[in-house]
Amino acid sequence: MCAACETRERCFLEDIELLDDRLLQHEYILSHIECLDVLPPELCTLDRKVEGCASNAWMELAAEDGRMHVRMTSESLIIKGLLGVVTLIVQDRPCPEVANWEPEFLEHPQLKPQLTIDRRKGLHAIVAAIRSFAAQQSSAR
Amino acid sequence: MSAAGENSTWSEERVRGVRAQFPILERQVNGRPLVYLDNAATAQLPRSVTDALAQHLCWNNANIHRGAHALGEEATAAYENARATLLRFLRAPQNSLAVFTSGATQGINQVARGLERRIDAESAVLVSALEHHSNFLPWLELCKRTGAELRVAPLDDHGDICTERFEELLSDGRVRICAITACSNVTGGVTQLEPLVQAAHRSEALVLVDAAQAARALCLDVGALGCDYAVLSGHKMCAPTGVGVLYGTAEALELLEPSVFGGGMVDELEGAAPRYSALPDCLEAGTPNIAGAIALGCAAEYLESLGRSELEQREMELTSLAETLLAEVPGVAVVGSPRKRCGAVSIVHSSIGSYDLGQLLDAQGIATRSGRHCAIPAMQRLGAESALRISPAFYNTGTEIEVCAAALERAIWMLERY
Figure 1 (cartoon, chains in turn blue, purple):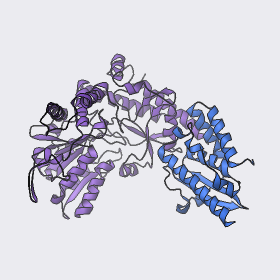
Figure 2 (cartoon, each protein chain N blue to C red; figure 1 turned 45 degrees about the horizontal axis):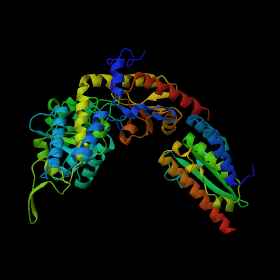
Figure 3 (cartoon, chains in turn purple, cyan; figure 1 turned 90 degrees about the horizontal axis):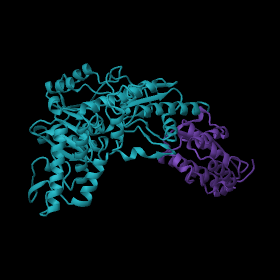
Figure 4 (cartoon, rainbow over the protein chains, first blue to last red; figure 1 turned 60 degrees about the vertical axis):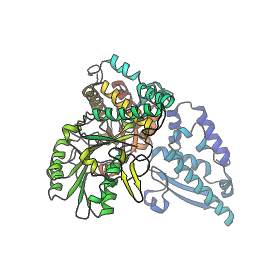
């Protein structure tokens, strides 16, 4: 899939908008677990832990040939699904594009109520860390 | 049919009549009828309480005790009337008092701070492993400030406070105060308070009972129990948030030095020698939550009107039904097995976290609570890192509990596929 971050995110949100039932929306989010490049348990260390997430989550960020590569996981299946959505959006995209991506999905009217304030805060922190890393990689090049 | 269904002590007509008093129960959440099972966190308000609140704020709003005008007199009368109602609600003996607080947490902190000069490095404070953090941290901090020893009475295999160990921890006579919950917010386990209070008093220790979780459903008779202090939180007994009560015998409250200072608590102030007012005013510095106190009095009247023992029976039935149905859900284990359980059942699943379960129940219109429930020592002892808590109140129905169990099964089915 070679669409840009914004396009990938828009596709996801359009799908969510088609689902008018909360349980179905959750089902759809959970289906994105398969998009994850799962960080293995032995790498779920304190330095990879995401601060501010009510359910423990870990991530490892890397850039390969100027393209973003994320490995993430969480104890929570719903969070794993959402991390899968993030992976779907940013994986293998050029770092400058990821750095400039203005995420909408966490504030989307159909997704926002799905997440507790704590969980949203944790996901905001993850997205911010990814963008910041991507910006560093972009300027390093 | 369930225990809280056709065999319930409350007829369906009565349940319908009670539910009609709670407009919030008519709400839809996420496209489904609200099933509110988070009453251990906050219970809902009946119309009589919201009407009393509105009546006060719209027609009688004024500060108490100080105004030389009709509204001030009306507000003062309503506030003091609420205080008297709460003493009756607690079956308080003569020569005891109710201090309005912002909730149980403030009440406990007030006692811990107020006793500070009577606690030293030779003293000990005794709590149990079942306590909510609000009845644990104020004592931990008191012990850190004074050098006193914090003793924690362990739980038995059921998750009840172990009476024998509790008594042993009192045996050296160093314990100055015991602070114990009347009902666990995690397991719903009801503490058998009488032997603990008697043992503490034999050792000349004071006793504070945290009745925040118990007050709505269990008829606490502080006079018969003989505790020195008890605390309540309004929002767990059908009153608004931000108001509560610190009950105490006059003798026990006299031991407390004020820890909050301000208006309304001083009779004379010359130089650096204030003469503080008599109880309860000296413990109610500043303008209190007048509207909240009046609403709390009204909530206590409402609960009385339902019949206290019938109310307890009703909540016991619903809790028992919840325990039975939830335990039948594959992969689910109920946390603790207290000898008497009321108002809360916590569960864990063998592979799915409580936050995910809670979120998928919310998606089906069911309000529960996930996490450690501000009771980390209890959760550790009970072997649960995080639990989903279902906490019914008298206005819930057996059908709602069944809907919750079915929704839980559905959530697990969804999540287990990943």
